[in-house]
Length: 321
Image (tube, rainbow, N blue to C red; front, top):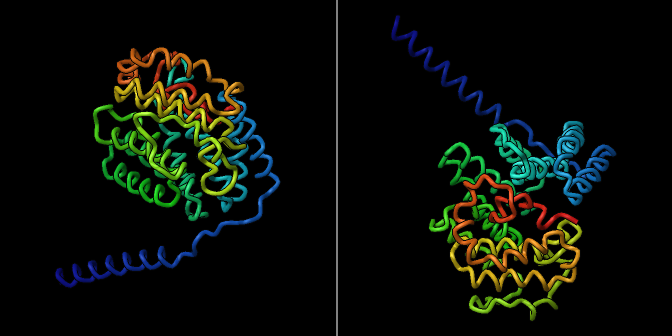
């Protein structure tokens, strides 16, 4: 009798498990909507005003509007992505705060969740995939979860394959907090060089990486538009070279960094860029910043002499008007 009861219990458990699997598998897929609600459009406007205006302290208000619009229509991938971006911006520039709360790490988790939704709703948008990979890596790092970290890494490789001009930079920037002598940091820096290669269609001279001869390639159309400035990222060009210079300095290649930094001055909007004085100081202090940047993640100061990814302008270096 006891054996019979055990067999019945085992079969019941197996049946229930099978039913659960079938029920989950058979559930209808969430589908994206192509229609944007009035609330979503208003939230879009507030999102861009907050981002381009560098209004970090107004992120909570923008998040309230964007999240509200998402909850009213959770099938809108654009709104989902905007929620993710606001969360990751708040985390990325947390150096702005006088005291950084432990709960700031929740923004990585929420950003990853919203980008996951954006990718599910619009799987063909490689930028969403890149940000999903970046936030997955961030979450894995926070929780010291190697399995999650590896998942994010391979998601990033898929994103790079899907849109190298955009996601080679995303991949390298995301990993620029790694120790300077680590293999992951070396890979991150290599991805920055490869970004330049794919943007100009040839291998950049790494000994003399002057960019003046490539400026005629600037475009606002096609896949290579992300190599230049745009409405979304008004100073993408300047910010890219500021970050790449910082990464070279951290690697100890401060003389090459000075040449890379100087490329930012080729931008036709350089005079309007809010961080040109930061760049000029970077060029002057490149050699002394080698040690500073290697220890920047541990620094308590709020000065500009921190590697870009750990600075108060980690996002604004490209996105601030």
